[in-house]
Structures are given as structure tokens and as C-alpha cells.
Image (tube, rainbow, N blue to C red; front, side, top):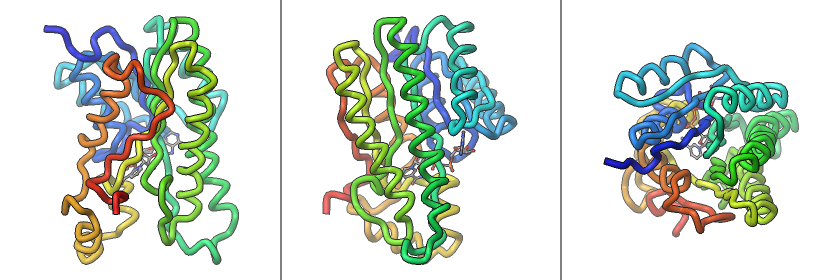
Amino acid sequence: MTKRMDGKVVLVTGGASRPGLGAAIGERLAAEGANVVLSDVDLPGVEETAALIRDKGGMASAVKHDVASQEDWDKVVQSLIAEHGQLDALVNNAGILDVAGMASDRAVGALRSQFEVNVAGSFIGTQVAVKAMRQSGGGSIVNMSSVAGLVGFRGSAAYAASKGAVKLFSKSVALEVAAENIRVNTVHPGIIRTNMQAAGAGTNSDNYDAIEAAIPMGRLGEPVDIANCVLFLASDESTYVTGAEFVVDGGYTAQ
Ligand SMILES: NC(=O)c1ccc[n+]([C@@H]2O[C@H](COP(=O)([O-])OP(=O)(O)OC[C@H]3O[C@@H](n4cnc5c(N)ncnc54)[C@H](O)[C@@H]3O)[C@@H](O)[C@H]2O)c1
């Protein structure tokens, strides 16, 4: 039986964290037949994710990669092409979250480091992927923004600024490469149960009650909720979709 990602080679950044969005995306795409290369600064962690996917019968490998480094991006994509011949989809998922204080008190260094990883990391990745995808006639780039790239969040101004930037550079690149059959879209997760979310909310269960009460669907999202959306965007089911933003938040920003 044909699967939705048969024959496709995909690079997913930030695949070490479990529970994490990159690992869930890798697993979902591999279950649909993709050959998935997972990358992360945490090499043992991402190797473990790839091994777990292979244990379930999927095709997956792991590579060390700091997304803020141009040199790393060039190496990672060159070796992916050398090994697999083409890059069909890139998921710029790696990111960091700053929730250490209100903008009025926060040193500008916090903003710079959010931009270094969340914006420059995805920006360089998009550039390198566009060049690779030109060689093979097209492809799909999925950039992970956030609901914090759509509305304001108290206590995470630097993060929100970085995610808003991801949204708008993605739309701009989408316009530049649309005629080359390269698509660029953003995904805007709400509050999803991952290590990042747990680190941000802490262990106080009252925090979770408050979060769930604010979500119209009454629950946090699961990583697979995001992975299902990315699957659509990475597959040929979305060949007429570009420059668009996909909100997956249980209705949080509909209010
Ligand atoms: N979890 C949520 O509620 C949520 C909501 C909205 C958006 N997001 C976004 O989704 C993405 C994934 O989030 P998550 O919840 O899985 O986070 P996570 O913290 O659980 O995992 C992030 C992964 O990225 C890796 N990483 C960090 N810096 C890196 C770098 N410089 N180079 C390579 N890898 C690096 C980490 O090692 C980690 O494995 C992030 O971009 C995040 O901002 C998450």
C-alpha cells in the first residue's frame, strides 16, 4: 500500500527532546514512509530518537547540528544530499524559549539569543534548503512558529518577537520561490505537552489548570497533533499551499 511520504527525504531539526515536537514529527513522517534525518545539538538524544523510530520499522538517522551555525547547516545538508540524493522537505523545528522575565526588566541579550536560534537558525536552514530543492525541482519547507508569533504573551516578549519574525520571513521567502515549486509555510502550535512546555510552566499543577481552562478544547495539545499538520504540509497533499500559517491550538487564539 502506498504511504503518504513514500520516496521522500526529510530533515527535521531539534529531534532529541522526548516528549518533543521534532521527535513526534520524525516518527509520524517515518510511519508514512519518509526517510527522516533528525538533527540536534544533543547528539546522544537525537540518536536515541532515530533508534526508536527504526525499532518501529521507520527509516531514520541522526546528525549533530547547531542550527545557529551556517557551517553546520552546509555540512548537514551536503552530507544528506550525498547520502540520499535529494531533500524533499525541511522542518525547521529546533527552538528555544525564554520565559525568564518581563520585557521591561530583561537584558537585550535574551532577545539576541532567541533570534540567533529561532530566527537565524530557521532563516539559514531555509536558504540552504532552497538551494538544495532547486536542484531536484521543488520541495516543502515548514517553519515552526508559535501562537506566540500571532498574539502577545506576558513574560515571553523576546520569544514572541522571534516567532513573529519566523512567520513573516517565511511568507516573504514563499513569494520569492513559489514559481520554483518550493513551498514555505509556518505552523503555530498552541500549548503542547513537551519538555519545553514543562520547563516553561514549571511543576506547579495550578499552572496546568489555568492553562487548560484557557483552551476552548479544554486540554493541552499532544506532539502528534502538530506532527499531523506537518505531515500534510510536507506531503504532496499540500502542493497548492504556500506562504500560509497553520494554527494548531485547540481554539486558543480564536478568542
Ligand atoms: N511545546 C509547545 O508548547 C510549543 C508551542 C509553540 C511552539 N513551539 C515550538 O516548537 C518547536 C519545538 O518545541 P518543543 O516543545 O519540542 O521544544 P523542546 O525544548 O522540547 O525541544 C527542542 C529541541 O531543540 C533542540 N535545540 C535547541 N537549540 C538548538 C540548536 N541551536 N540547534 C539544534 N537543536 C537545538 C533541543 O536540544 C531540543 O531537542 C520550537 O521551535 C518551539 O518554539 C513549541
